[in-house]
Length: 383
Image (tube, rainbow, N blue to C red; front, side, top):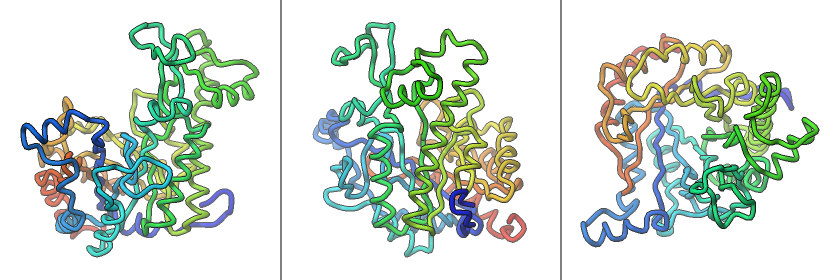
């Protein structure tokens, strides 16, 4: 339900396509890994994104019983995989439009194409430091000597300033040009919650509290609680701006963002905010990376909170232990995770990470295929 317009939006593919997959398309450009040229020359390493084949990828997903596919228009490295007019376009595409190719490939395989936009952006601290928070630092080794604000370093991009408008502009570009049916913002949130310097956020804080923000270290309990509510509210207001833009541009596109299901990190969206400002609730359960089911209560939270909304969870298909993004999880543990979610009426998004050459780990796709093939005959009852 759109609170502003009162219109009920069709949940379409969210209800009909509970078997989904997301690709972690976080491939550095050559300027971000200049040493990679030496690896290509001296050791025959494959060219960045040289093996990317959208049609092959979509065919493999179709064989794996995947119904909807999430892929990135821009990743956390700040690289766009489509010809953006306002952002950095990945140079290794060589004039191609990888995002557009994946859209076409999905449609040809009867898979619903869905967009992921990464709010986090590693290019911004270098390209637009004035769009980012400053983080006060007491450690000289952490201090950016080029920073005009003495004793601070550059943090993540700020949603209340020019970067927030930049994100909205890239959203317009994608929704106007591509036939996606979902728009998912990852890592939406203010970074450096404990301490930051930012004129945009500082003005908002001063307007709410009548004083400057000087960090949380000396706050009383009640002051900290009020601050946390304000801080979450900034995220919530921005998420609503994105959702309104999506609705205005494409009424057929559903909006959600990854509030992240961390139990120990209060620096992402609250679950109730996700329910209030998204068309359906979703989140990334990183703490299930090693196949640990003791956190399955979090999935119950998704299901309970969503009520009439079809909830979704992103459950990695790789172990991700000690930075290992190439080893598939054990079949038994991953099967237990995905069946647990489905038994609670929660849709599942499996995941695989894109290799630097644009390929992917076939073992992880085969793992997903085995589990989704087992679920497919039971869909009428699972839904």
